[in-house]
Structures are given as structure tokens and as C-alpha cells.
Length: 72
Image (cartoon, rainbow, N blue to C red; front, side):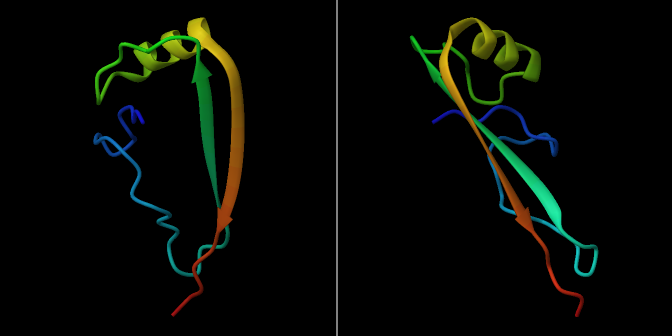
């Protein structure tokens, strides 16, 4: 499994972080099947990830999840 750089500057996914009482938050996940190894290194820049996915993807899927944390 490969994780590119996230919006927090790290690598990976830490779970939903909806603020209490702020309503539902949408989380979008993309999965790509590549026809060969990507050659990307952990923490690769988004531009490199996009370039690799667009040029080597043989299938893709998307999942959108919704999470809401009640106000305390």
C-alpha cells in the first residue's frame, strides 16, 4: 500500500477529524489499480502521484464517507 503526502504534511491517514457540532464532513477515498509497480517513494509529491496514476491506471474506484461528531 502506498500513501502520498497528506494535507498535514505527513504520510498516511489518521481517521476522521470532524469538529464536534460542525455538521457532517465528507471524506473521499480513491483507489487505483496499476498495470505495473508505481516506482513512487513514500511521501511523494502530489504532482508525481497524479502523473503516475493517470499514466498507469488500469482501473479505479472511489468511496465517499460521511462522518459527524455530535456537540458535547
